[in-house]
Image (tube, rainbow, N blue to C red):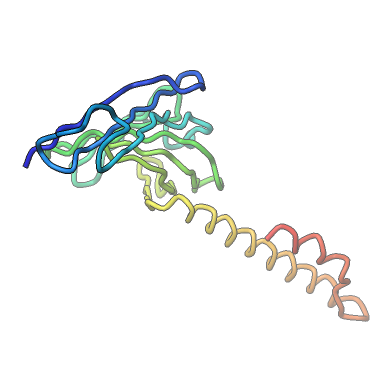
Length: 193
């Protein structure tokens, strides 16, 4: 089965963006297909830019520029700017993956969660990455394809913090005669979750 496409490129009114109009004929003969706005199927493709870096990976990760998996199948090469890395597969035909840090969600001394943009061949999208420092020369990277889960992690941490503060307030007030937590103390915490 052969299909002929007619493509016409034209500038969009915004600088640095181009669109492509594509039309597909109803059959392989392409009879009557003279412009990209004719045909049984008409498509408009718009070039998009990859997100730029908005954060850096933790220094305890990037202090070593080259990491490898325990089985030796993948190598991770961190950039000198600490905001991106490449994944190279050793013994397979997998395309190289480039990962760029776009937003830091959570950070502690031994754990950092970021939203990153991942590109491998024609596949790209946002991912949620959590880096754990297990030992000085051992890190764990957890990857979730749905970057929205990073926000869920942040909400869980905020709820945990809220509950910890409430427990602390309860202990503090239990030494008083009333044993009640003032409502005014709680109103500010409800807004954060």
